[in-house]
Image 1: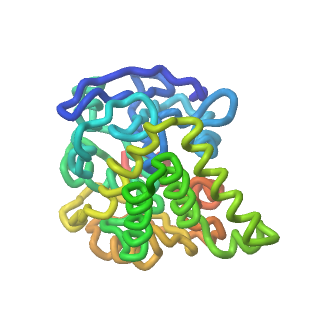
Image 2 (image 1 turned 120 degrees about the horizontal axis):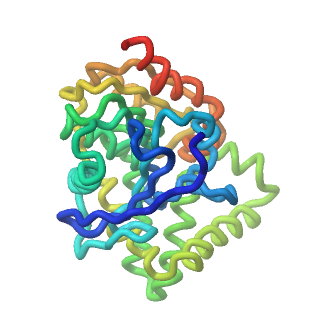
Length: 304
């Protein structure tokens, strides 16, 4: 059984010290799990407040695999913050360096990437074709959409131009939260726009309260990266499983479909009807969980 209890470790990479977490037996085949830019490696906790806690129920009953996750360099958690923002390729290289330090002879059985984690998974598969056996990309694509880039530009403008630095963080996070969810959810969840606005401000204030001014690096070191990356999927031979969400404004289904057409070995593409927008990758695990576990486990059994 994979308990929601992690063993933490640190690895010195060419870009700074990277903190990781391992769940399950250390001798078992490994699956990397990475989430969005505000994620940490604390995927699951006994108290149920892990970053991607909803994913744990899919893997709790297995003891055949271990799961590894990392705090992002420049993100929240205990990894270093580089002096200058890293590229997607450099983030991928840092994780590859850390993985090789603990699993020097074994390829990863899989990579589950939601949002930014899915982008990094594509880069990892492109750069390390012999080191990754399968990749699940959830709510992510090979390039940013114009709409999502504009939303991030406004977040950066708030950080750069707000005279009150803490207020800039709160407003930037509030705008980010607005972009992660759908119009349909806001209509069904809130009785008035005032209530919705107060909720968004609360989410921004909570980020600042829990992480202090280090939360600023989300917008100075990670948000810009998502506007600048472009990954060519055509050379990626790794089997890929795709999941999109119908109301996702950050990784719209049309862009994920474009990714599918460019990948030479896309084994499955699941489109989830969701009111949660981009956050469907966290909220809608039950709707794509069966396809994910089949891709990771049953498909492996069928081909051996």
